[in-house]
Image 1 (spheres, rainbow, N blue to C red):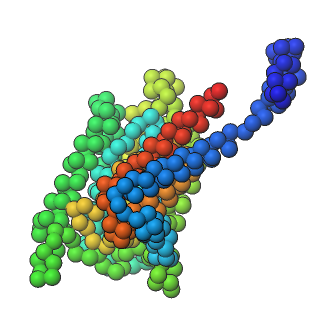
Image 2 (image 1 turned 180 degrees about the vertical axis):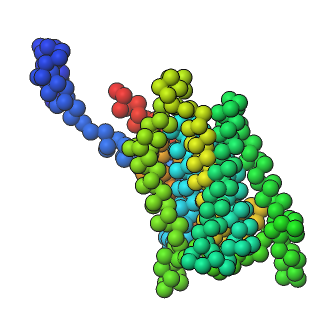
Image 3 (image 1 turned 135 degrees about the vertical axis):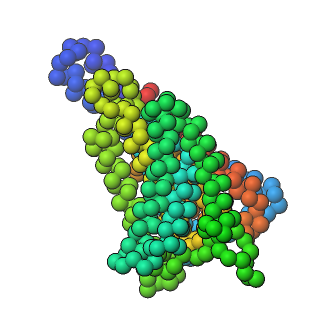
Length: 378
């Protein structure tokens, strides 16, 4: 009723008049933010209820499953810190995804770039970095891991820019190359595998020296595992948001993503920007792998990445190009992963059921984003 009163006035006003503009502004009575917030929350709640029904169908008492899930997420200071640390790694991969996606590039190789970053960070921590002064003992492995991931992503960028190779295919195939390289490095005694002993014969690297590990944010509180990766992630979110939304580089990447031919005619070097976008994207994923080794695991195994690269890809997709959206998605998946791990161990819920529940949440959130967008168009 309120809007129709103003809509009827538009017919009686000249199209370009000042009064016409004022009436149009007043027509937009209903804001979009209730939909943008309420619909994803409702979708997540529905997905959670469906997940609970699936868990109950397995015969597991819901009270035990929910208690185990909550305890794994936020049952103690340690669990909260561990969840945030997981979110940090997922956030770096998600930031890398949206950086490349600004140029209309889809980097699905976060898992491989993360694996390369972790492997090279481990190698640097074990061979030469421990004796460095002034914090370089952990900074240098971080830089090397970032560079390794950047090179792995940059290869796909070069193939895209010089040969027109689809980046989805190249990053995916590079992932299937990186993961066996990590496996080879921990299987070979000439590379990173630790010597055999009566206590352990598993294919893994030695533990990295104490000096190369990321410092804890609260050294006096031994119950909190939060480390330096958290402020690094906050800084990365701010930098990526400013570059993509306010910087000239973000504008050029967007121009390349919208129309490469028009961008070249405007004097923009689209090939160089594609390589830069993929290199930065891979570097952020490589930094995530280095942080996982230096801040949490402290030694390299062939499956240390544990699917973080693929989960980070989903975080980037759900964020819809927003750095703040990456933060929310990373926190959601970080706490979900912690809760699901504890639920599987404590309540004996099958891991397949946990993955199904996570998939339902992803589908619901993605569907809610499409719904909000269509309502906004209307």
